[in-house]
Image (cartoon, rainbow, N blue to C red):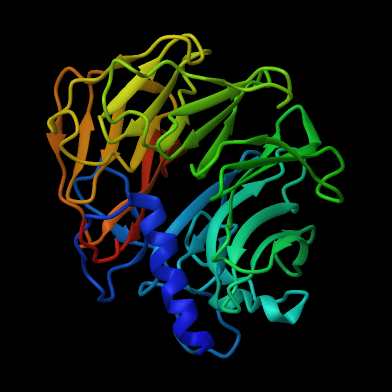
Length: 369
């Protein structure tokens, strides 16, 4: 019975990401993480799991639901999957370790859905994650030992009511955390998760993710309620004005532009919108996909060149080199969807800077409207 409930939970968690109407993609061995060093022309799957017994292992069958980077170490990755828990790498993805230790044991971390991961910007070994366990309980968990041991900080009894989703840490104060759930609640902790207070309620709209600007402004991507933002640590919240763009209230992803101080982009059902004034005004990018034609579920930006943008939809992957004036389609190395896009700059063997493009492959659920 529990297995059946958990299968329902898996489908529900996925549907909460995209909503109904998505077609099912590949279920073969083409999941995990992929990297391209030539702007998406060719790809390498980097999902090998390190083992002590010499038996080859990987998470190439896994659907990647979330990924995070360590702000202090470009080679440190944390990946959350749809049913195999958390994998982490400290060598740029060459080898991965599955997080296996946990308390309480009922979390069953290695078979949990991972909804969110956030690395403490001041302490690389402190990482938070929101998960759904096979028991259908939803937890906020934390490691302070670089993934070797995890403990529960907060939990909901049954996913049927709501599940924990978004997690973020104030970059200026690692003691202050923000947590969002699928019922539209936003919680805040001022003591690294020891205690929590509910600071905002958005009825019947899930909180998909948080992004916190270096100046402390908090942005929340929501379902059907657009973008929320707070400039006073979460005491008060406002809604971005997206009324001119039908469908933009359904926000799937939100990213800061590292090359421009006050710039951010959102991926919505309408398309991609950019703000250059921290969410006060918005301008749509011209895309190959038309307004409300598809769902923009992932966006990636080159950290040194704001004109290089990537985006993923349930059926395609696109790139621009001129800030959105022209776009090209890129062939993915998987029949799955690019749920996660991350871009960084690394040095090659000659010392030259090379763009490193990553995608996390994800299989959307079969659903009908």
